[in-house]
Each structure stands twice: as C-alpha cells, then as structure tokens.
Image 1 (cartoon, rainbow, N blue to C red):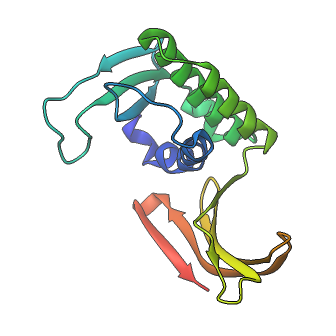
Image 2 (image 1 turned 90 degrees about the horizontal axis):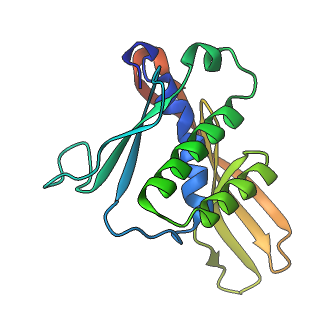
Length: 185
C-alpha cells in the first residue's frame, strides 16, 4: 500500500475484507497461512513476496503471506463504485493465491458471489441471546461502510420480526489525522 494515501485505502478496504471473512464462515483452511497482507500499488502483476516468518512479530502472525497487488489508487480515489473495486481486487488476489498454493477456489468464488448478491452491504451479526421468557432474542449488529461502522442492538421476536433496533455507537474514520473517533448514541 502506498504511504502517500495516508491510510485511506487500508481503512476503506476494512468493510470488504471483514465482509469476506464473515461470509467465508471459517470454512477455508490452509496448512501454512494464518493471515494475508495485500500490498496494493503500481505493480505490473501479482507477486507473493513473503510467506513464512520464524516467529510472530508485533505486526504479523507467524505464517503471514504478503502479496503485491496491482492497484490504481488515483482511479479508486474518485470512483463511485469503491466497494465493488475493493471486492474485485480482493477476489483477484485471493484467487491468485488459490492458484499458486493449490487451494480450493470454489469456496472463495461462492463467498464473493454471496457478497455481490448482498450488494456489498457488510453486516455482521453477533451472537444471539434469548430473553428469560424465551419470546425475544437480542444480538449486536455491525454495519461496515467505507468510512464508518455502526453498532446496533437488535431485538427480534421468535418469527424474526425486528421489534427494536437501537443505535449504540457510530465511528468515523478521520483519515487525515490517522486516528479513529466514535460517537456514542
């Protein structure tokens, strides 16, 4: 990732990477990869530059793959379909690794198909808790977007009808200052 973008790409891509991981549902297993870092920039082609570390360090897990990914930040910066661009970039990078490492690509393709069907709206539902009378259930719901994420507490009846959806917190990424702020509801 280019240093001159002040972290914009890293923070904006969070919604698509988290949606991918959530939709993947821990079904994808590898023997030697714990994390993947995409280094986006003006590269000609995809290139796996690092695969193994002897020990974990402050920034990366022990078996972190670092992959150079062709990306035109200048085109992305003014695009109106940023989520699609980010999802396509992530999909091509993961499929490149699937081919290179002989991983099953069908699960990856199915996950991105699911994301597209949801129009790249990243919603992550937390663990459900049943009320003492067993008539309602509540769960946290996180909505991720390019420049913010929002946390709600949702209450449903047994037929999955939403009875209440309360805003708990909303964050705003303040990219120019390189820190995250949030507003409590």
